Image (cartoon, rainbow, N blue to C red; front, side, top):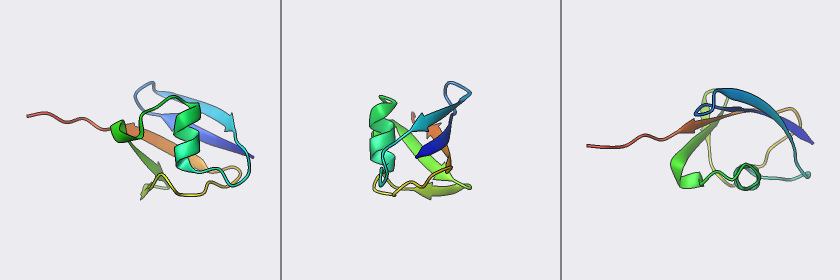
Length: 68
């Protein structure tokens, strides 16, 4: 399956091919992104690392910024 991913910190769209039944965690591993540093969404809804992705999903990966 293929998913479309917008990576906010790089301001780019990429298409990633994944195995069926892949999760957000699998996607982040392929992209070499630490899951603790991002929030992942589909249709402006936050999704968790165990969310199973579907063919042609449009995912956004947003960097988490913290500080004091």
